[in-house]
Amino acid sequence: MGNQVRVEIIISGYVQKAGYRDLIQEIAIALNLTGLVKNLENKTVHVLCEGDKKSIESFVQRINIQEYPIIVKDIKISYLTATNEFEDFSIVREEDMTTAISERMDLAARYLRETKKELGGKIDGLGTKIDGLGNKIDKVSEKIGGLGTELGTKIDGLGDKMDGVGGKIDKVSEKIDSMHVDINQNFSTMSEKYDKIGQATNDILTEVRKK
Image 1 (cartoon, one colour):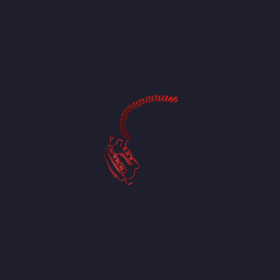
Image 2 (image 1 turned 90 degrees about the vertical axis):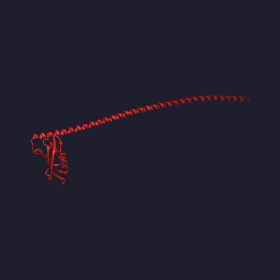
Image 3 (image 1 turned 60 degrees about the horizontal axis):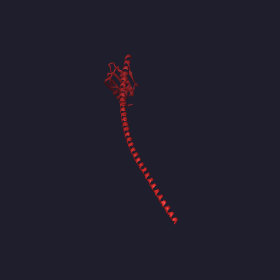
Image 4 (image 1 turned 30 degrees about the vertical axis):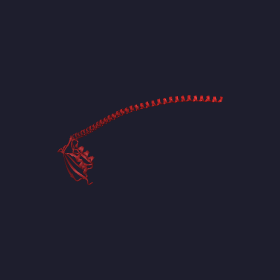
């Protein structure tokens, strides 16, 4: 494991009695680092850890916290040779129980603020999405209204066309009726002529028989 390195870190600032060591432990475990963290009497925080060099570099960046109640002012790093002496990453607590409880409460308050901030962001995002959905609904309503108007216009136009077709059908019916009258009159006239021709033929045949 040639990439394994050991670092000693001294962190100064507002870093004690604020739940900082618990955060350091959480970050170290997430990066698969081993070692320990403890408070020093001069109000600094001491970290001794080992792991992959890239993970160590990421660790240093992530523990440089600038959010109340933790404000890191300086980080001093010394690179050493890894010894693989640690099995996990632990917190060395030497203070009294009251101080430890107070620090845990500060850490809990920090988590609560972060959760509130995250929840507020999600609520704002949800509000934006709801507004966007409302705008889309309005646009759909406008399209439906426009479609209804367009459909109504087309139906009115179709009605006008049907009225026109109906008028044409009426005219055709009138012509057919007129043709029926003409045909009936022609048949009547032709029947009268045939009757006259038949009567004249009978008269001629009668005269011929007499002779």
